[in-house]
Amino acid sequence: MGDPAEIDSGRSWEDQRSTYDALRARCAVAREESNWVALRHAEVVAAATDAEAFSSQVSARKAIPNSLDGTDHAAYRAVVDRYLTEERVAREEPQCRGHAAAIIDALPRGVTVKTIAQIGTPYAVRSQSTWLGWPADLEEELVAWMRDNRAATGSGNRDRTAEVAERFDQMIRAMLETRRGTPITDVTSELLNDTVEGRLLTTEEIVSILRNWTAGDLGSLATSVGVIVQFLATNPNIQREMRTLVAASDRAALAAAAEEILRIDDPFVSNRRVATRAVNLGGQEIGKGQQLLLNWTAANRDPLVFGDPDRYDPSRNADANLVFGIGPHICPGRALTLMELRVMLEELIGRTNWIDPAPDRPAVRETPPVGGWARVPIVLR
Ligand code: HEM
Image: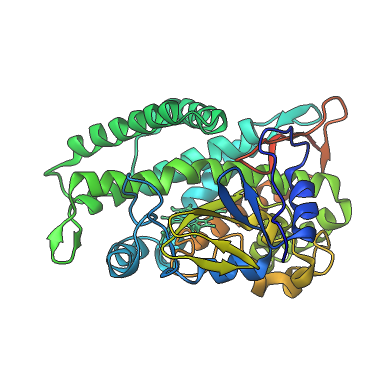
């Protein structure tokens, strides 16, 4: 392969997917300033599954389990996985359904509704809060925090991002203090009594685990609701098909549909790795210490694997779908997320006759590093 294509990170991005599609057609691995970006499916999978050549320890800040490698990662990952089993996820379903039903029922019919602000965000915050046992009156603070976190991430200003992260940590630490020494009644107090390698988790470790369950993922869930609802509002045939699936209570097909829609328009764009040695990826020589972004959004639209990337075909595309990653860091929250998205779809579709795009306001795309939509105005019928 010749010189890598350069990604111009300063340009405006109407729909970043078309930029990635064009770049991926030219090269498997592109350059973005001093970093590399893997765009094709084969190279993203190769790097994500080779944790020896591509470490997740990309900054000085330890994130559990995200930034760990090898046996260290496996030990903490086992802790995290215990909280996210199918059985535990199933126990959360009635609470999520209650939140979804209340949110949809409270929305007006026949006028414009903001999908992310009025559906996705409250649903993400309330579902997470009941799962973790956090008080309902924290909702306002969490929503404000999500807004500031998004703005800080978008600004690319590391000090601002660190300040917002610190605010979140303080919120969690205060909550842990109120639970210390009390009986185990929820996931948060369970973590206070949980162990890794035969000793209790430290406060710092618990804060880090909770940060990684909530900080990025509250936003991802809200954004995913936006992507799926926008897709249904603008693809009437698929909305009709989904209404049939909801009427038939076909849970597996609904979850598969949600995952396929997120493949076509993956809002969780990328994760970072650092090369532990010089390594050739997709014809490019990545030097030891250089950073590589795994661009899930681009890989999920690779025609070499998916043919026409915009063709909605859950059963054909499920096996290669990378929305939740691959390799040792594959998302432990997949089952929880798919349950939450399915339940939201069941309640949204079951409690409405139709979802239309708003006639008076266009949907607006997110800007990197976040994908999907910033605004999805709809009308519920
Ligand atoms: C739409 C929602 C979500 C998407 C698209 C998503 C996507 C991903 C992806 C692509 C990865 C791989 C990261 C990598 O390889 O570096 C990942 C990892 C992770 N996700 Fe998710 N995720 C979502 C929701 C959740 C939820 C709800 C939770 C927890 C409750 C969660 C917890 C995590 C954690 C802890 C990791 C790191 C795992 C490790 O390093 O071993 N995610 N997620």
